[in-house]
Length: 434
Image (tube, rainbow, N blue to C red; front, side, top):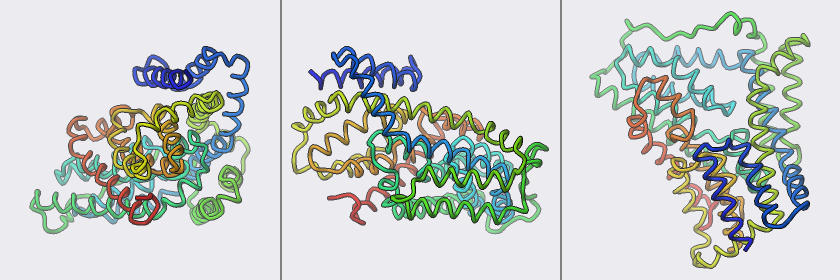
């Protein structure tokens, strides 16, 4: 009975989110609470909810302060010299331009926002692509690959995986550092190949100095926030925050590192209290939206686990999985995770599908952390820039002025290839059992 109720709960949740009848926040709260009451758990439902929210508090704190921190140092112009240097270095040779586009997008996506990455990268590089008559699909693909491969601890998929599986972010991310490095090698190799192909198509063998370099224009408001004299300080601060989080993630909570980092960044860059308040307000909307989703997800996971529905579903499904195939669940999910981005939005997959897969794997002796890592190799990481379920995809095609179908046909194989390479690397390096 519990297994059927759990299946019905997830089905209703997915239907509500995918058909846009309910927002993810509303669905993640209303659906599981209603299911718990229908299951006869009564006032126990409140305990399930509170337990679920408590378990996510550190993750919510980290994400909120990560958004505020990266927003603040970006406002201070920390990335400006790097961006301008890249734009000057690419010249007018397609190979350099595509590789430079990839590097620029990778750096801009350090804050974890695909929208910001595309809004900065594509307008900055598009004039150069047009002057050289380069294929705009290449620009879209280069930016998409860089953003897709960048599953850092404060990005949405990583935080969702940690929240839904109740696994520390450091346990998910740290083993994947070499895998991400391998993925980056593939991405920059693909970018170089795309650039060489464009050179051959255009018949170019050398740079044409007559073509002007691209430039960036900052608004007066942006100029007023820039702190170029504090560039070195902000870079050192960021390295300390991220380095401590990666190296000492088990001892020092990531939320604390971003809290302290934000405070130091605000005090040094914007000593005036009013400016500090305005910087927080400028980025509070994005922080609040994700915090709300994560707390709502705590309601869902709390009810599903506390009521026993998740365990009952897994026990019912275990019988359908051959014992000898259990160890290969992470590999199979790693290979399928990127295409699944075309079917599930991040909330419905990470909060609706992934916990069930993880529980099935757990029943068969496969750690949940491996399942979470497998999902992160493609599900709304490499998959999000081509998924019709994410606004960022339409932002890419809109800024580049290309058709969605053309973008998907051109970029999908490259992103899927990155996901496959990283999955194979996980097997070779012993992260996934085989």
